[in-house]
Amino acid sequence: MNNEKNTNILEERGEKILLKGEFHNKVFIVGIVLAIVCIVFSSFYLAGENADVFAEIDYIIITVSVVSLFLCVKELILNRKRMLCLTDKRVFGNTGYSSFDIPYCDITNIEEKTKKSFIYGNLSYLYIKTASNTEYKIEQLKNIEKVIQVIKSNRDS
Image (cartoon, rainbow, N blue to C red; front, side):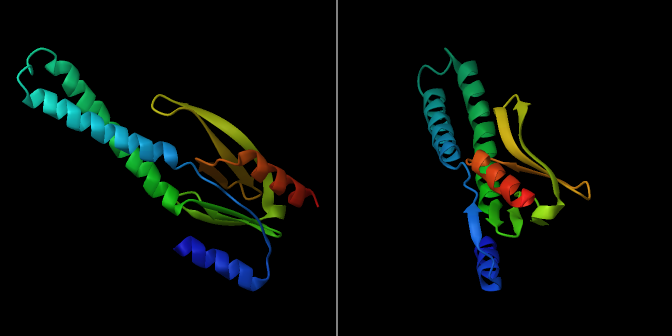
């Protein structure tokens, strides 16, 4: 809701919105459903007659499912806050943890970086560095290449 208000304020100021960031959501929704299904079926199997045969495997499945459920819910909550909006004058948005408002002339470095994670695998994110040495990392962004092109073209002009 706060992101929509900020976008409306930009439009009222007369700034033209060039591009909005798109974030991954479907994979986390699927992850939540799969985690719940695994927890339910493993619990039913543990409560059944043959619970002694492979009980350790079910306990491992339940533990991994609970951790996965927690991570997927966390990312979905962060994605509700995340926003990236490119106007004709600046980059505006929220990383999920903090908001930012950067004029194009203050951006010194912008690139796509990849970090390796045991849980997420290779995770690519948008890295923005400003003239005041402030760094922003925007994760789960779908259209990173388009965002980089628009920022570089507006920064150079």
